[in-house]
Length: 158
Image (tube, rainbow, N blue to C red; front, side, top):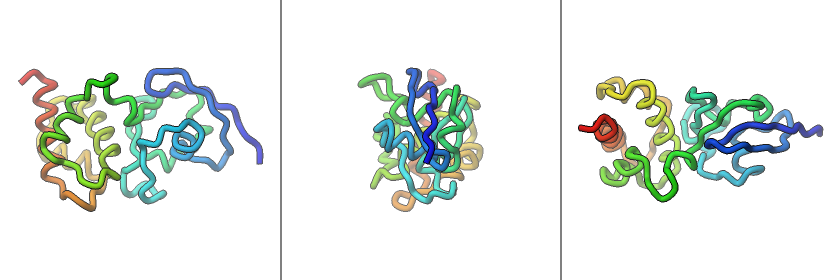
């Protein structure tokens, strides 16, 4: 099987890896680069546990091939915090107890960050709609939505 050399940017840093044509970016992140924050929940784009941004667009990493990321900018859950300083979304997930087992949490946080980058003042309905591609089997969604809404308010300085 042929391997391809891919150069990309991940969480603001240049990155290079080898991957086969059948490897997803999720496989490359986890297996080739050791970035295990994005989770494999379904391998079909239905659960959102592997959510990343690719050139600023929210995508399921299980649906994108690693070779397609050549020259692209990838952001994963590992790039959300600033060192030890948690992003407001992460802080509010903790404060609102919006997580339990943690499988879905990275995907929700990446999706919420993408939402707030596009719409810093979403309504509850807009937030629920945006996060509809992420499934949680433990907590229900009220605490997650509350965490995102509170993070949005903090980020707006309210």
